[in-house]
Image 1 (cartoon, rainbow, N blue to C red):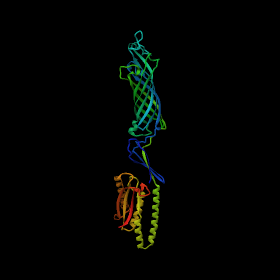
Image 2: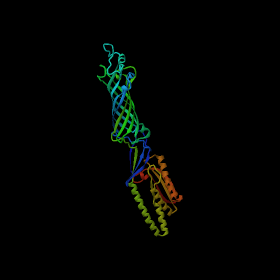
Image 3: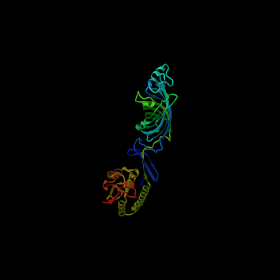
Image 4: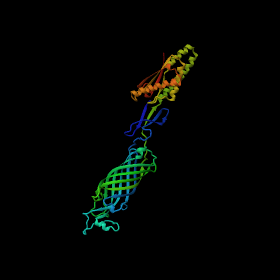
Length: 422
């Protein structure tokens, strides 16, 4: 048989075969599917252009700066937006590039740069009712500025990691972390003259609650915490850095869906040579029947001589699947016919059962074991199932051999039975 191997395996996972329940058959070919694991957790790595997605959404955010207690948490809440494009390289690991941001509100303080001629401080924007003097005395102002955070995130789908990929799963838990560039944009209407917000490297950590809407769409509830340098809001001192907390709801378009193939190996067997050999054996069987009829018409001595000749010159071939030593129903049927010939013919004929393996696969130890087990299977079948006299059987095995027939390794995974006079 000729064998064509089509295989795709996930990186860093060894190939351990588990046969699929379904085997595709045709007149000329047989295909068997072997998966790398029994539960289907391993998948093929798709091509670069598969498993991409685009997401967009909005929500709310707040900044944690140096003077949070002077401006309450609720007063600092502002709208937020997200826009991202990304790809899942495996069901567990994905990467996205995202732009997020919009507007931040807070309170800031400066003791040197913005004093007016009367010795007070600028107070830009609305101050809390009754607190105007406090803000002036402490040199505080309301700040409101636009910003954008461009970041790259690495995502880990924990549901697929621990429970295996399942396309129809309604909920996935996806933590992530990332780095980016956070740029505060000037807004002259809300900041003192000369104020220059900074551009900083920022870090992100977050958690995506992913809800499946269909084959092509998901809803992501994204809770993200960001961290930037303390000078980000224009005031340095008081804490190590500024924090930005946001929660957004994003609609995700999975381009082409988010499907994965289980990692598998397909073994294809060419049945044409076996079919030809089966036809030849069928013809030999028919010829044998005709010869048997001729023997019945001959005298006893001539019939016995002819029967001995048939027993000696008619070998029997049984083939096995790769790495197997169990007999198929077809093989057992052929052995049943052989058993009838053995029992009906000369009891002085001894039949040698020889096991073989394909030298092109496995190693010497495996091939020695397989050839012995195959010979033992034929020996046991002839005795236990069809009542052949053990004294007429002899068993041996040859281990791995090169192609014996038609340059086809499948015909070397076999047992051949030949008869000889004692």
